[in-house]
Length: 127
Image 1 (cartoon, rainbow, N blue to C red):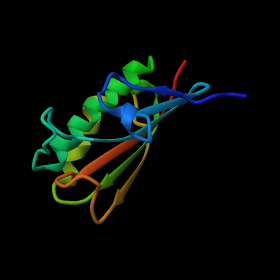
Image 2: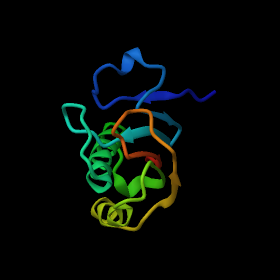
Image 3: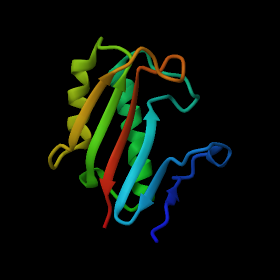
């Protein structure tokens, strides 16, 4: 029987949580929600900067699993504001250069961390 293989790109504290940054099962990689915070944990005031930082973190998880953005087949954006959301298309173009994955955008009342405007999760095929 296949087992879940947790993937952690070296982020601290994840051994204290009840989830992994990502789980690989077979050739599928399921990436937990990532938020776009600064290194000090604060959040920039605009959604496009937060999404860019979230994609940077997503890239770290992909690399730790031996994958790239070309391997991403699905993303979901959970957004707490529509203000400035149109500009996030340019952020996606920066990371997906060889075709876009399937995508879903969901407007939510709020996210778990105060100041967070977007949370991104993804599915990738590895190998």
